[in-house]
Image 1 (cartoon, rainbow, N blue to C red):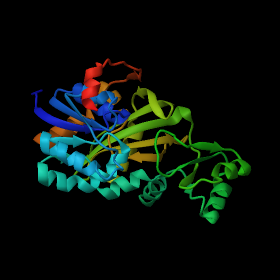
Image 2: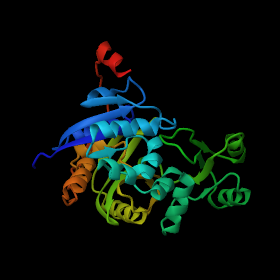
Image 3: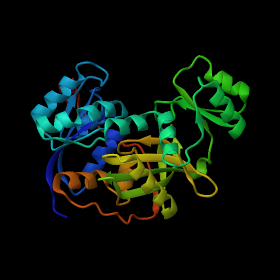
Length: 332
């Protein structure tokens, strides 16, 4: 495959997602110059990339100007978002960035990001499209919560409407447990507990022009809310469902669906991410390099072909990096 010189800016160089995008770029056939940004000077991605820049936190008022200054200096061909907290910002700024700098920001429209960000909105969306998400209710809607308890029963899952990696998630087993878990907390959703640890999956789609052009399904084991073992195999029935999820959501490029299955094989989606997945580098090892496929399509018009993939297990492990003091001092 012909090497394609390009410059890619990756945000969140210290995050699992941002580092995964860099891994996928490094493992691709693209001849990519990588520019990474992150607020923390000790973020490994800043030193793994060809260039690194510190930026303010996305919540700070000077974040926009810092990003625009880097875009002005570097003029990257594409910008890839590596943290959840930046998704809404770049969804809003995508058109302005492309017009000013000619940089293609691989981000979905704000309404798609909003559906994926809020787990209750995810439930409402999936239900409205005729799918079968876990039954859900907001604690402040006493009638709906009572109906959920009556119709579904325990155990139930209590989780933040906005959040990731299982932070703040509790499984409750009776009315008293539910009341204790809800007490003094806001912004929660209560959901049906479906499937089991052995029927948990993460899946990805690439959608352009309203059509799912490639997809992948992996069964997974979790540790601290992240996939640390992924099992590749023949999940054709689930893959067909995932493709339908993608076309219903209609993201611009990648989206990630997390679900468990019923005994009849129905995928019960409980989380959507309108972005690449934390398992992106694991998928790339299986021949599904979604970062490369998206870049080739957007920058060179290359048609996305469904990779065949290969069966096996991906094991995640830690890796170390040495950074000299003077290099860190120069980043500060």
